[in-house]
Amino acid sequence: MTNYPEGLQEFIEKAGWGDARIEPIPGDASFRRYFRLRRDPERNDGAATAMLMHAPPPEEDPQPFLNVAHWLRDHGLRAPSIRAEDPKAGWVLTEDFGDDRMREWIDANPSGERAAYEAAIDTLVQLHRKPAGPFPPYDMATYQREAALLTEWFAPAQGLDVDAEGYVAAWNEVLAPMIERDEQTVTVLRDYHAENIMLLSGERRDAPSPGAQGLIDFQDALAGHPAYDLVSLLQDARRDVSPELEAGMLDRYRQKADPGPEFDADYARLGAQRNAKIVGIFTRLHRRDGKARYLAMIPRVWRALERDLEHPALEPVSRWFDANIPAELRDRSGAFEA
Image (cartoon, rainbow, N blue to C red; front, top):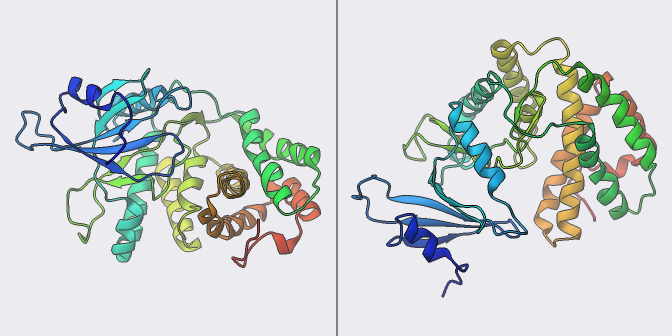
């Protein structure tokens, strides 16, 4: 028998879904739990299913998710509609986007990969034409805190005694020109990739077109640089994106958004920063949380990081990596030990 969180039935009854069948959805979050609700499709509102999230305080706080969801929908982006909420108790009932994630759709429709990424780029273009939402800034302190995950987790896992102060100084030197320019600030979803984009066409999984795209997992949104979500999408830690596809999608973005002469340098800056962070996060997930499956993704992240470090704008950080992380540990082979 499923052990449902306390208060679940009371919440869905108040939301008008008390007669629904409850289906737990497996997840990897430590405290958040998800359920799909199914009921008679002949109900007045026509909705046969809904998604129920339980993000219980104090470990979780669903209010940021609600804030971003409302902002996105108010500005014409396809976030799920909110059907009911009780953030103090950790409950949120949303529209159900179904099960067709961009990643699995591409796996089943490899010939549609380019079209799916074009649609994802166009969604970012649409988002970046809006003023930044009322979210905290993606500032130097945040960039540094994230980049430091590499020295805090990956370096000790490899038995390395690295120059942590020099690492901070290198990132300051690399990121300061971008931050000081402050040319364009947009809403940054922060985890915009093929596993967080839902396909909403309503067609079969083997349909020839990827259809409309829905956004999920955006609760950590900040106001920052437009290149960040492009890095998330095109240097995906979870699936291979060919250099040719990456270059083609960047060209598409440039043509539609006209991001300015420093865009390529900033894309490399944020690519290196994000990939350094992810190497640290995936190492932490293995060593602290016992989630070894993330180790298989680290070589892909290192390959993207190495490409980013080749840009002249990354020279101080590249020099630090050469002095502190031996080449054999900058994993390109797939054999990661932590």
